[in-house]
Image (cartoon, rainbow, N blue to C red; front, side):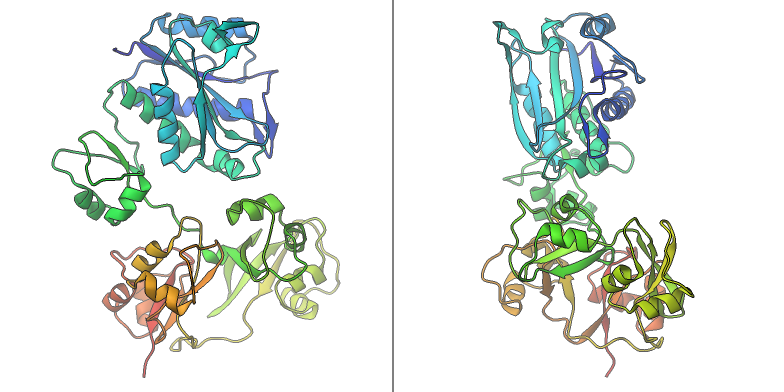
Length: 468
């Protein structure tokens, strides 16, 4: 059936704030999602209207009237009511009307899953006092439209929903746009800089993977594909999730007597943050387990040529002893580096934290026993082995692994790198600059590190051939 138009409903508004918590207010986030969706549908040439475009209070009668006034009350009208859930769960849900089948709601969940969101369910809900009617007024008061309520995640989740809602809400809105386009056979054009590619005539998984510098297996994993068959017009995710720079984190090894609360308190962070960064399903820890701890409020700077430090911003509860202890230096060292004459600190004060006591000469590479790789979210043994052109078996053997299970923050030795030093990319670095500093060529660095281009990211580890 043709599409007459789409009505985007930003849930709640004005005096009705909806749910709130963890820095998220439902009425504000649903408006951001709805505005993004509205703009994208217009770009695709889809007739679209919104129930509200500002922080406006709308009761159920006024909201329903605006929906029906937009494009009428026909089966060829789609209504998407955007909401954020609460109640301690995790993941997305879609509620569809009793009059409709599950096809559209299922497509929405499938597209949200491609963006990394956990999926709970799509379902219908009946009014307890009259089971032949829908529970929600959005469904009841728009009796012929194809209306869905999309709950993008839980703002009080103990999982990763909170960070995902804050950081990925545009990706989730784009997922719904893709679902609408697919459901109504509308030509979909990905936004500029998108992580998606629309399959063209003559394409294959190999040609697409090659075009975007990933492997066929990466492409299949990203899109949950069980075969190598692709169809013209199919939208495929083609961009791997970017790894967080390891330099932004401390690697902490769990000791006897540790708890998440104790570790969070020691490093001035929260239990929820540590659980989210390390993708922990619960609060149980094991001795020698390695955790990534965010270095809150720190950035890399140069203290003097070839010497590195960080800038730390003083927070409530800080003391010179606490800060010095966190970074493994003495209070006197901290005071002398910052020319402090007393132990008094002020919130917001910036302190220089020296992290090297010796200067590395420009022509020497620090000795090493090979590359150590810290596992980040999204890693698996295959992807790491592929990155360094070794086998999974090689990695398992050198690290004495008995299974393929990895934990975020786990440190792995990379076989075949024992005759190399490692260099961590800093702000302002380029392949030419690094190659010149260590007396090698750009092509050598690219070949050794299996680089397809010359772009570098801060925190990236490079292998540097050591000289005889």
